Amino acid sequence: MEPLEPFTDNWTYLRTELNWLDRVLGTAVARQRKEVKEVERVARSRADQATSHWWKGLISIEGEVAGDSPADTARRRSTVKLSYQQQMESRIQATTQKGITLGLPALCQRLQLTTFEKNLVLMALAPEISRRYGRIYNYLQDTEQAGGLPTFDLILRLLCRNDAEWRSARLSLSATSPLIRYGVVVLPSLSSEPFLSLPIKLANPIVEYLLANQVQPDQLESLLQPALKPDSDQSLQQSTDLLSWRPEQTLVRANEGQPAALLQSLIVPDTVDRWSTLVLPNSLLQALRHLCDRIQYGNEIDNNWGFQPTALSPGSVVLFSGAKGTGKTMAAHAIAQILQTPLTWIDLALIKAVDGDRVLQEIATQAPKVLLIESAHIWFGRSALFPAEVLQQFLYNRQQQYSLTLLTLTQGTAVKPKWKNQFTQILDFPIPDESARLQLWQQAFPSPVPLGKSIRWDKLAQIVLTGGEIQAIARDAAIIARARSPRPKVTMKHLIRALEMRGIDYGGCNH
Image (cartoon, rainbow, N blue to C red; front, top):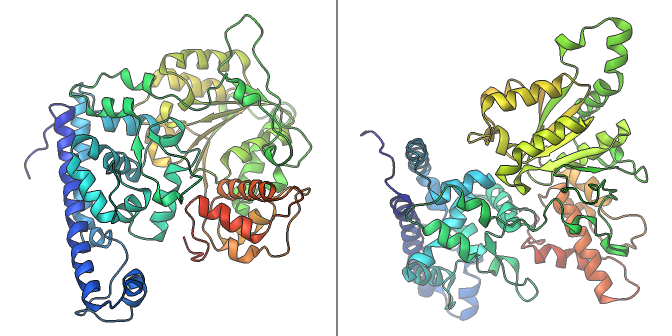
C-alpha cells in the first residue's frame, strides 16, 4: 500500500469523508429500492405495505429474510470500514503534524466526540454542501421535507448495526451531550413530534467553520457556547416541588469586586445519605470506600505508625471512566459527604483554553481535599493544552497532599497511556444491568411523589438506560402527571409518555 499522504487543506479532507458517505447512502438507496419493489409485488393493500416489517420475516421473498436497517450491509463490510477509519486517522495525524487544522477532526477532539457523533455531524453537514444529499435523505425517509435534513431515525438506521449501538448512539443528542450542550446541533421543539423524527440541523456558525478551506486553529473556541457557564447565575437557580429534584447545593461564590472563580465549591448536605443511593457493582463500591479511608486515616497512620508519606504519595489521583449517567459525579458527591468536606469541581469543557493557567493557580491556592475535574481528556488527552511538564508538576503536587483528585471522562482510551501509569487508580463505571436498573427506578422518585399502582418496575428495568437517564425520565413523568391534574399520581401511562418523548420504545423493552 502506498504511504498515506496528509490532506492539503480542510476541503480536501471533507471531500474524502463525503466519498465515504456517498458509499453508505448508495448502499442504503439500492437496498431500499429493492425492498420497495419486493413489498409492492407482494402487498395487496396499504395495510400490507405498512406492516411489511412484520410479515417479511414470515414470508420468503426470493429466499431473503429482511432486516429493518440498511446498516446490515455495513456488518458485511466491517473490516473494510475499519481499514478506512485507520487510514483516515493516520492521514489526519499527518496533517496535524504539518500544522494544518481540519475542522471536523478539531471539533471531535475538542468535544471528545465518538465515531457515531462525528458521522452524525457529517450527515447533517452534507445538505449544506449539495442539495443532492437532501434529495437522497428525503427518499430514504419517504418524505418531501423542505430542507432535506436527515432525521435522527435515519442517522441511527444508517450508522448503527445492533441494539447496543442504537442505545449508545441515542445518548448523543441527550440534553447533557456535547453536541447539544455546545449548540453544535440545533433541534426544534419536541412538543409536537417524536424525538426520532426530528430533523438534525447544524448551527450556522458551525457550518461555516466546518466548510472553511483554511481553518483557523483558535476559531473553534469562540464558537462553542455552553448552555451553562461556570459563573452563571443559572447554576444557583432552585425550583420548587417537582422541579427541585437536583441535589441541594450551596455554592461558595467569589468576593464582590473580584474576578469570578473558575473553581466551584459545593457543600453536599446531610439531608440524604448519598452513599446509600449509589447503585454500583460491589467491587467498585469497595474501591470508592477505600479512597475515602485513604483520606480519613492516612495522616494518622503515617504519623502514629511510622510510614513514609512522601515516598508513598499520600494523595490519590483517580480516573473515573464511564458513559454519561453511570454515577461518576454522584460518587464524587458521596465521597465528599462521607469526608465531611466541600466538593471542589470544574468541567474543563466549560472554560476557555486561555484560562487553564488560572485553573491550575486556583487549585494550588485552595488545595482542596476533594477535587473533581470533569472532561479530563482536555488536559490528559492526545492533544493536551499544557506541556507535559506542567501537568506532571500538577499531578506531583496533588499526590504530595492528603487529598483526592477525581478525573472523569466517558472513554478511558482518550487518555494518553503515559498519564494512566501515573494515576493512583482507574475505575470503570459500567452501564447498569437489569437488577441495578430495577433498583434505580424504584429510588428515582422522592418519597413525597404520589405513585400509582400500575407502574411495572420489572418492565421498566428491561430497558437499557443509565442511572442519569432514569432520573431524567422519572422527573419528566412527574411533570407530565402534574400538568394533567392538580392532584396527580405518577402512573405507567406518564412514564411511557416520558419514554416516548426521548425516542424510547417501551413496547420493545430491549433498546
